[in-house]
Length: 210
Ligand code: URA
Image 1: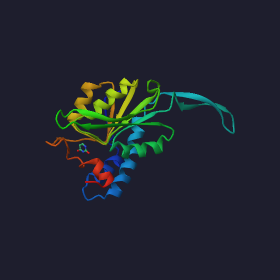
Image 2: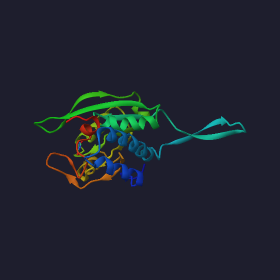
Image 3: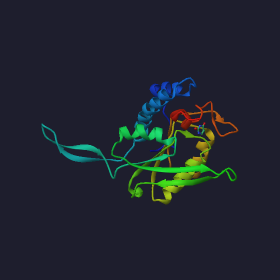
Image 4: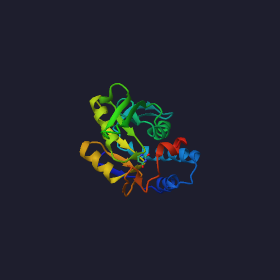
């Protein structure tokens, strides 16, 4: 991928995002919309995957047909909201390997602290797609990418639903080599770290917790 930031302005994405933002949208619909939108975002985040060809035989003749090069992709979900995007992208890339990163914010230092980390082997040979619906401060995303790089990942892409300018700036500063694909860039973060206008707490909205 070339550009650091790609905003997917496709009408289907924007329409679904508006439905998701609406506080009247039910948990069931929110989850379904997130799944649908994740297909469309995944289409964009995988657009420039390295390609090769494989010799196959059609009913008519032999041909060198295009296939994705290299090892199976690694999809990394930042818990817990990342799992909503993960479910959809896995439908599109069912053979992908999957990892999970769990981070919480220390109330004193406000720094992300790791509580769970399990990722596929040989990350250095895999295109690695990190998923988290909300790129807010960018602190947990940057920390997750730090961990993945320490595990060997070299080709990392970040896929989210909504991004705040603060989170984009943080990621660009910490990881300028990691392209971001999002459905929208919102106005700002409020004092509680929520994206405005946003859609609220993505985890609560997709799982019906509060
Ligand atoms: N996480 C969320 O779920 N929502 C926000 O607005 C910011 C971070």
